[in-house]
Length: 539
Image 1 (tube, rainbow, N blue to C red):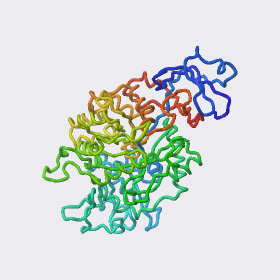
Image 2: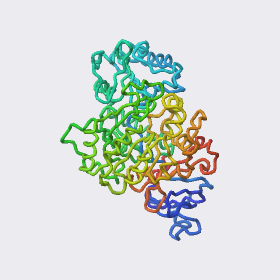
Image 3: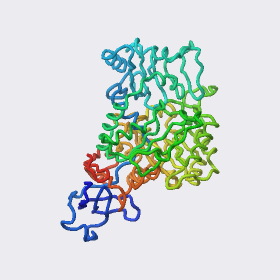
Image 4: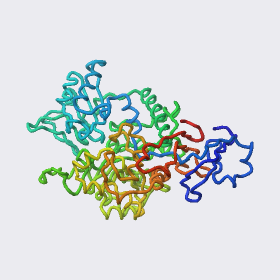
């Protein structure tokens, strides 16, 4: 497909996402780019007859490739080699203990055992595992299991010992060492407390990272994903070398990376090299990521009302902030000085309002994409919605969260509050710059990067259990597809992606059925028949 001979895709149902030409039935691809798109009767003579190689798509639905504007590619790739603590692999703490025991039987005592994905509401015991649970699986080697949200770790006693965490260890700023009634650490480390074990967990080799990323690229191709992000690693690893090496080794997707502010904020010499920020590259650095609060499912997102069952006198009953005002202002100043994008994680109402208060009145410093993008935005206030629309600050949200984690949302926040969360309809109608993404692997789903359950959630507002989590905030299928393609590409600043338009990259998807015509509750049954990235068929 990369030769100079053009290929004419014809007899297709093409949704271009180009407002100037929303529908078409013919598209010509040459040299990795789209040379022409439109209707069969209007095909230029130079692309007719034997001048092109013809591919008859037999009426198949064609859309721009999906752009996952918020995922953690390096983490997701690495997790393929770790224990999956999600159903159907693990349904209880006892099954998690058994899985740890099986891994220990294949490893030496000095080797870490790692896993990811647990959600207490998906475990039979309806509680978080503790150090003592993990000790039953393995007591003589360190064990670390990451919660599905990515903000909480559960570690065993050996890991606590290695990290020097005892009953006398103070909580770090923006984090909590969970303790039992006797003051003993339970092994659950929340928010910045999870970082206390990071220095002791071994990093994968570059060769392992590259191999895992190339494998992830194949999975994403099968899901129609043509571009993705690495929104930061939790241990400070620079993802850029691995991603660029993976691109040389066969990773096809365009990828944008973000650097976690926690790991560079105290380095006065840190700069983002302009050679790394060129968005014309397959892999580039988009900017800085800052965490301002935690997760709803971990009860650490910072709301203006307490979580269900919380003691109102508890200072953390509403969740808590995970960065200081000085850190927030420092990240803003750095991004302005370096003309790079700022990404801020903010889920709870209070966290969102606080971040916007620091940003409101500051002129945008990027062109062609939002200077600031706010991640998740679970429960924005009416004032926050107005501020987003007025300032052009982007919102990157995840309807897959309530879809997959509905039991946790209902238990932590109640039904009525949950129905107001992720207000897609409200945000669109207000004119907010918006896109949807998965945050994989921080998603309680067997294949967390799969776009189709995410789209189904946005369109139906029905969780995986069938629970209606706010019908008034539904959007239609065409809006959802636009948010996952054109608007997602614009949010990150991917060059020439997200629309099927002459001059754009020929990165598109052929579906096995017409997603615009299927019943909404079957959207997750749609499959990808073929994926093309820059004109090459990669699936």
